[in-house]
Image 1 (cartoon, one colour):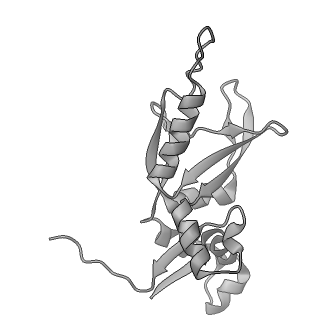
Image 2 (cartoon, one colour; image 1 turned 45 degrees about the vertical axis):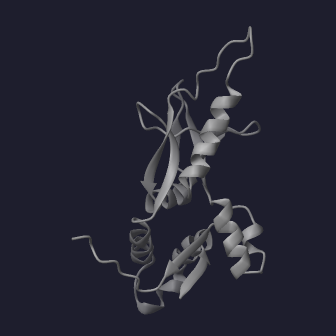
Length: 174
């Protein structure tokens, strides 16, 4: 049986003391949850030479948003769109910001850690700034989730459908 649950709600619930009924501490529960996500790939847009993530800065606050994508195609489409927007018209200055960007794969547990912790980052001028991270699901995954769950939960921003099969084990290739 394939099951479905919202990834963000699961992370929130995992940090709740309500999950500690079996005697485990909340940090242990969170670590167990994150270890299960270590094998799930997500994609990020980073600077090619340093591996630092690209951020989108908000206009109203000194906060930057970083993004993880559940599909390579989603990350590549965003990167291609950003590169296309920075192409100069005749006579304009060329914006090379996105020239050194590339899509990389990282484990979902890493994405969840920075999603929850909101680490500070350092600007080129040496000033720290706040960060927030979003995990962007693929359109098809959201559509599939909405077919299985008509509650409307997957129409809310930040709800990432996570499909799983209980006790699934794959044999290692020979």
